Length: 95
Image 1: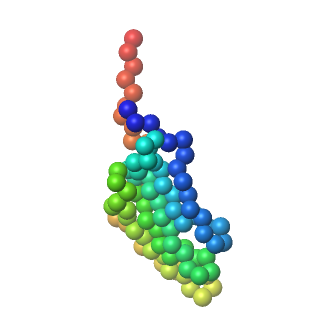
Image 2 (image 1 turned 90 degrees about the horizontal axis):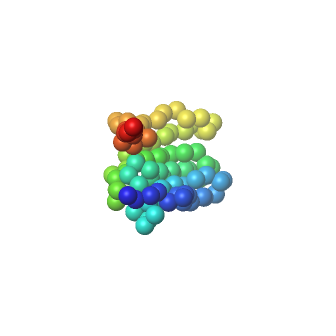
């Protein structure tokens, strides 16, 4: 059975935001559903996100954000999917 790596990795950009975070198995194969990417404008407002992904790191679901001149978010589009975590098989107990 494959074991997850002790930690994933994250890329940081100006203003200290995380640009991406990716979880991998021990042999560096992406963990399905655990890939995240973020986009920002020149002053640090989030403009987009991508999340999810399959075991090859593809198939991320996109969302977008819009900010006004006061740096307030005025809209957010989200993907039409639910992200489920903790979907491990049920444990079986034997006596």
